[in-house]
Image (cartoon, rainbow, N blue to C red; front, side):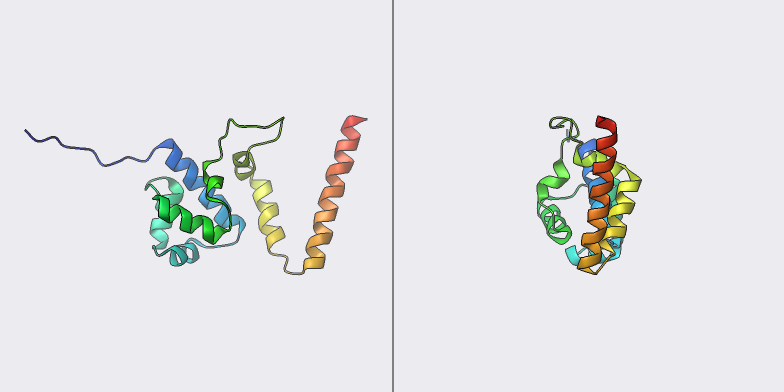
Length: 134
């Protein structure tokens, strides 16, 4: 009697990793086609990775991390590990305004302008924090 084995099904972890890939790719302004070419797969395969339909192998995940210039650990950020009230990485990925801010910021090529924008954002955050503490 032969046993029929099911193909390995994608898990919640595969979907979480895929969503992080999608968020980082979009934040860097890369298309699925561009990322696919860089790692040697089609854009359809990148879509499958991002939607969690297909698992990403370890070596492919390392290639993706290298292309996105992030440590591979970024894809395994634990949603429950929140240090002293700081938000987890996934929290940032899930907020469309934060992702819009990242995409817009990355589109600024002039370093002086980037520094100025960053200073404005930091000043606005400091002002907001000062108001809530008062």
